[in-house]
Image 1 (tube, helix red, strand yellow):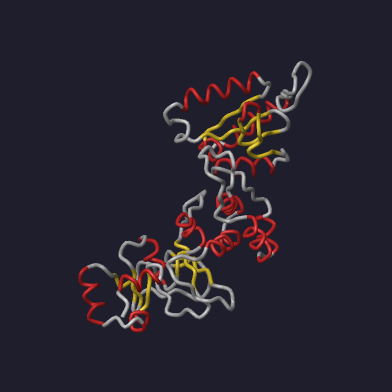
Image 2: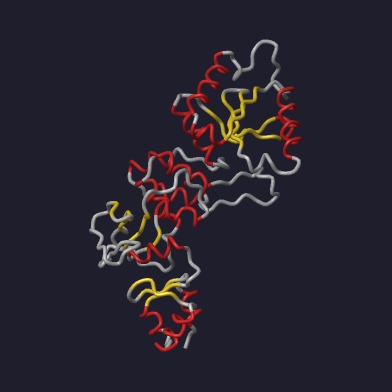
Length: 313
């Protein structure tokens, strides 16, 4: 006989009444675990570890698992905007779907937003996995099909992030490696694939992804995490020498960051580069003013090497 804790662990924090029966767990032990708070009944025949995220419980109450943008942060992905609805992945054969907060509310079979939930139906032939959220690949597929392109690419960039000069000294790792990315592209419909091919593994923040894509949409080619003199790298390089950077409060308020940032800026200025730094909020919420600055700098030729400016060795 397996214990309740083991059955839950094997199920990724979620199990059904049939799992307890198959594991030989007596009904009285299940009732005792419920009474003591070590187990929580989510809906009829579905149980969970009380410590799983609240949003996961809401998805289980619907009759599925956290999906799309609602699952993104639990996969460690960056999210541009919080969802207006709870996104829930359900199997093709799922029935008796209910509202995430009201078991009396029955959800329609269409994948529409209703009663605070947006349903994502699994493709034909899918096998019902365990746990309370859809796998990473499925989550990304759903985001590429469901969200605006910019939102989906922020998440996909973060899944692929593999920057060797991340400062940690550890080898670069990505939640979605290049083989996984190629497999993702191969299974996407044409519309989603056209979005996904614009992804980059060299983005370290939502602001960097947003700035790169908006500049590209303006017809301004950029290079991400470009190597610069002195062993530095720029978030984005416009043309030959205009460095565009997105600065978040956290990394630039750490001990020693003030002096380090100015040492770097002085070195790059001495090497002939133009440095334009913007905050995360400016890039997301004040793009018109950011674009105006970039265009003014480019009109002055601040993005190309000209007379009197020597290219750094």
